[in-house]
Amino acid sequence: MKKLVSAMAIAALPLSACTTVGPDYRAPQAASLGVPDSYHSLAQPAPSPEQLATWWQRFGDPKLDRLVDQAITGNLDLAVATARLRQAREAVVQARAGRLPSVGASAGAGENFDSDGDSSTRLALGADAAWEVDLFGGIGRGIEAARADAESVGYDLAAVRVAIIGEVASNYIQARLAQAQLQTARDSLRIADENLDIAGWRVRAGLVSSLDSEQARAQRAQTAASIPNIESRFASAAYRLAVLTGEAPGALTDRLAAAKPVPTGPEAIAVGIPADTLRQRPDVRSAERSLAAQTARIGVAEAQLLPGLRLTGNIGTTALGLGSLFDLVTGGVFAGLSQSLFEGGRLRSQVRSQEAATEGALATYRKTVLTALEDVENALVALQAAKARQAEFAIALDAANNTAIMARSQYRAGLTDFQTLLEAERSLLSARDGIDSSRADQALAIVQLYGALGGGWDPLAPATGVSS
Image (tube, rainbow, N blue to C red; front, side):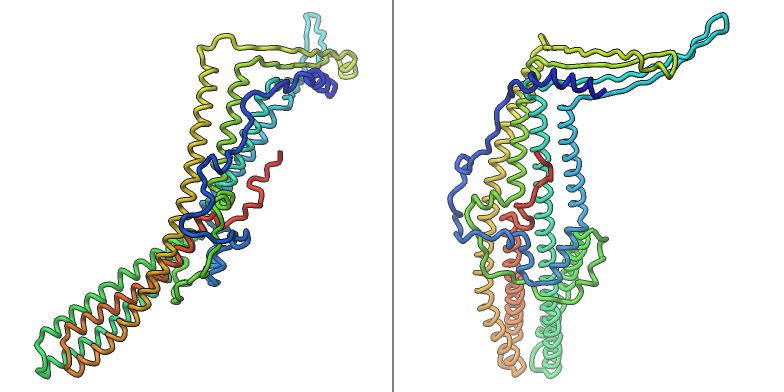
């Protein structure tokens, strides 16, 4: 059997891959994709790979760190993406098998009888092999396409990881914001209870009309009505975090019940230049690999237009007894050449179709690049806006707090009406909500920026583990 395969290999060696059809892929340069030299919103040094790979740790929140670690190991979307990567790797193995011969074996035994009652046993052994010679590189292009597909799926896995980490951080921030707003609402409810008592006392003393008491009662009810809505937002964020980490909704609610401040994140974030982002973003790299795969498939389609060479061989032996089974061994090798003469334009249409698919993949790649740059620009603007809002709300909170203290003191002393106190309390509540929301917005903008930069995975690590 080894002699048969060796003979076929020697025969095919001078014919294999005489030429390779189809275009050789070259990745588009950044300039041809319309990538600018710097970002419009902000220019900063490039971030280190370590900072981007574990960016959530810069928030300094151990609870967030644990949730991210749990999501990386338990998230089901990541499990699905990992399974798809394994499937893509096996497709590479299957494509490579096209370069190797296929070998089969057979064996048989029979008993012959005649009218005299004599009988004889006939034994047979055989093997056959077939080899498709890659005359014009169609099989090689198929391997190239399968390898690029596997790399694309590997980057898709990284993109899912980036998205999951960002979603975990965002929902954690939303949960902490809900806790901060809940504390503000409960503090406001306590003050509303005090105002209602003061207004009731002043009405009973005949110092004011019942209008003050009714206004105080309405204020108290409105404040109390906001609490269930905030509790619902906290529960939703906690439920989402549980699902993201691979657990049932509600599994993390008790662990998050202790109120913690909204994580603030780093003051400054290195962004680098757009070309850095394109290398870091896994979705961009996935789109580039998809373009490479589609380009290679043009060669696969073009190879179908050209002649095909197939080598086949067989070897076998038959005998009337086991002892003489290998006395006579026969075999042969055959080469067959095939060429499609007329198929109604189907094969040429397949080439044109694949060329169109490649043009679509290029457009998708360019769109992915521009969308990535847009994400970074939007995140930078959002971060700058959140910082500006937080600075103004800090001033507003200080002023509103002083106003509320004075209004409450003056109302107790009968120096102002309840409407003035009511407006002061509303302004204080709005300022406290504003400062909490702006802090959360800044943290969310940081999460958005790190996600836009492609943070959350190591771009230096192999995407697929598929060797060349």
